[in-house]
Image (cartoon, rainbow, N blue to C red; front, top):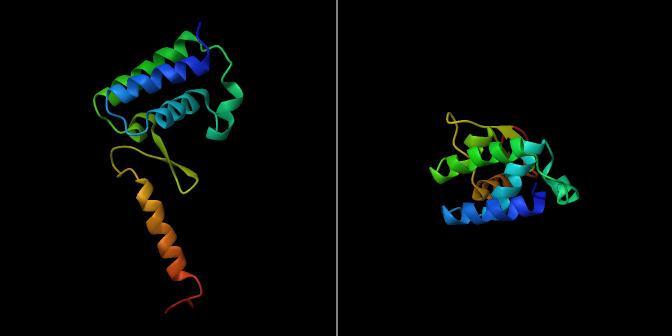
Length: 116
């Protein structure tokens, strides 16, 4: 059995090979999803052994990414503005730039009275 840190490295290499712009981040998100962990807790599990069934489920997700399917659709969830949202093909996946738009809107709204 492989350790999680080795699986993450392997997944990141495969994601890079299929054109992922953020292979390490995607590998971590896949692992968090499969392990049911919040992203901040993944570092505490890097030395754990990865069971074959978890590795096989990861392989299915990697195959979907190789077909250029968005990770959010494959996982059924995405993170946006620090919150986790369910996500599927019915919705566009928020881009990191979208958070900048939210920040700008919040700044613009700050100090305004309701109705103006």
